[in-house]
Image (cartoon, rainbow, N blue to C red):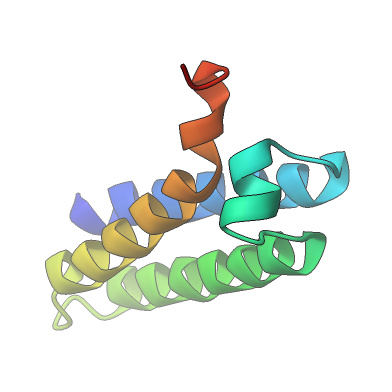
Length: 93
């Protein structure tokens, strides 16, 4: 079950990163504070695809624990999301 959840999250993360890379400009925080560029999003997409492959390996070989792999990817996904979500709420007061 955890490997399927991880595979879904990794696939969604890759799709999100590819969409962000294609869209371009981004928010103020994304561009100016965190220096996220098209290349940054493409790198995260590659990392997400690598984790999707890792989750597929976990599904094939049940002897490998999925939870540690999911924990590492979750932290990476949260850090990536924090790079552009902060500016999504609007202007600061």
